[in-house]
Image (tube, rainbow over all chains, first blue to last red):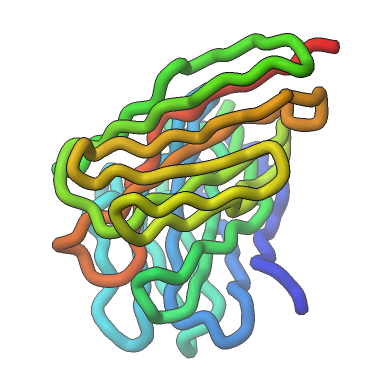
Length: 114
Length: 113
């Protein structure tokens, strides 16, 4: 079946602009995660959605970052008033509900803030 | 706070050689994952280790977990060029619901012919 789909694959924006990144998880996966990968760095957790529960936003770096998940499926990560330090690859992952299920990652959105 | 450290960060090796990547984590974790990432690509799941003493093997890669030492290893046997990639380990925080993972910084592996 289809994997995790992210769009756009690349986004170039000017400092101060808002951007929206989209993630379409694997069908049937109730858990959805956003991670950020900066150049040469590991993955930094941003936010986690599980079913209808309140999301875990503990990884969001500032109040300029927000995310929503509509209908328990598609998620949108929004970055307001982008800064150059926001430049990174934003990865979305999904998994089944159980704790020992592995995460399936999308191909990511490469965000460049000029 | 759960922290995950990998070493080495960079590994250059000859084809046919063996080597081990180490992954240490700071607090109790009930799951340890290994992922592979090729340049410009996303992460591919390699192994999920769920219990102390767990060992899993796939081709030339073997992963193990020692929960008492808070250590996981990824052993590479008779490396081939196709194994060149960045390898990440990730641990889950036992106090967190769901599968939220904390990743190590990655080990960039280059296998030379």
